[in-house]
Amino acid sequence: MARYHHNRELPQDAIFPVNLRLNIIKSKIYRASYSFRSLQISEAELLKEACELNDALEKWRLSVPRKWRPTLSISRETPDSSLSVQTVMLRLSYYLCVTIIHAAITQCKALATDRSEVMDAVRSSLAFSVEASRSTLLYLETAEPVLSDGLFWTLAFYPMTAVLTIFCNILQIRSGDQAVKDLCLLERVTVIMDRVSLRQSPSINEKTHVKMVAAFVAELFLLARCAIAKANNERSDK
Image: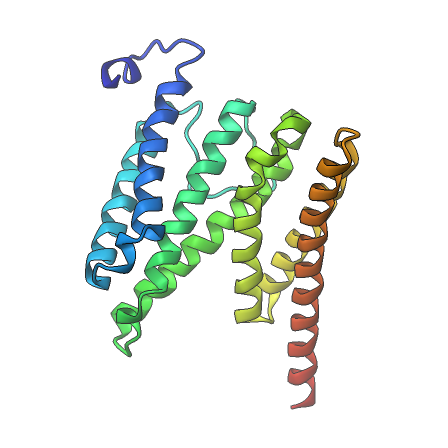
């Protein structure tokens, strides 16, 4: 598989072995973050595993042919000449992995210290996690035209994880230009969810489930907007 992957004249479907390699890394990330074993080992071991997984993920990213390689982050203007269902899944999986790895690092109690170099590392990991979530939502918006209705439940986990990460970050910073930008991003996601809901098959159960997801995202947007408004009012009263 490695020889096939590094062949310079890759066939059109070469993304599949690349994706398998990412899935292996993803499974290790899930085990490190969510398994029963992760509750039993020390935080030092968790941090070590997180750093190793982060290195493995970056090596994988750099090994992907440039045509399909996920960028470290994405903006609304970032072009994607290889837009397809397969590349969309690849990018969303990559950003999810980054989000989970760095979120795990920031949650370790062992990092709760006044040492400046440690706190810098915590802030850096938090920034990576939040930026990966922004990239997820921005890329989902860009990729919406190539996604068929039947893929909604396959993809739902990716934006929901990103939405929750962005929401929590808004509650933490509450004010400033970035909080407003993130709020606008959540609002655009609610619009995407509404469009997805309207395109679903006539199945009552399916439409109901999609509407529940859309309503949840809309509720988070409203709560985030209230948090920003409250922070602005408190600042004005001082």
